[in-house]
Image (spheres, rainbow, N blue to C red):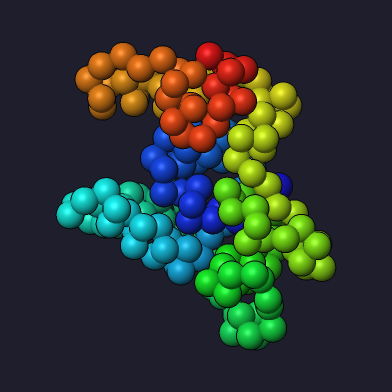
Length: 179
């Protein structure tokens, strides 16, 4: 399955690491555009004065690890598409350019299912999507989540319960299932 990752699912580190770990395990193929990555970098300013610089470093690593994931937007798609928030049209255009099966996003209201269906694209939310992946591939997802949890504990320098970490990453159902 080809999934276009919206900036809002790339920006939170724990969620991004879980998603990319699942992609590395072959559970889905990620797609994004340069504009989606730029949106992530600009959003990282919220983290403080080094936030954007850190995000740009993470983006460089992501691009190096996934050289085929970035798709070029087509002007024709950008001109003809409509979404409730015109600032999200580029995400749908990236999904179309990358022949994505779905867009993974937290922004449900900005991506109406009926509009996406016209393009043959589904809308997925991270927690239910990862629950589905876990149902289908429990060992792979548990391995990825375990690796991310161990890395988070090491970087924080203190213990954090898996369930709490996943809840903070806006993955409460996955946290309940695995915690």
